[in-house]
Length: 133
Image (cartoon, rainbow, N blue to C red):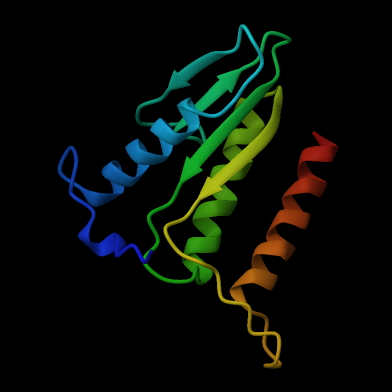
């Protein structure tokens, strides 16, 4: 089934808010340990739309970005800012899920980095940053 995200109904005046709400509702339905508490956040969101706080104090957060095409320079910068903010404000963050309404292309045959390869580089960069925190 192909979903055309451009047809996403606006919520609170924008498709971006609608996508954030959808991702938050999906996050709220995730299986979590007994006794975990779910928090939906407003603006500013400290790097995430919502998070689960586990009984041991660890946190799992979700960030939604309504990008309509593969991330370019400014979108990667938005993601960088979100993850840095999340790591700086959620000191017990153990899992961070980024929701995008696109499939990242993987152009392995070309000589340039694909969006999927850039995502892998981005993940490695922030795993390193998180390990230092």
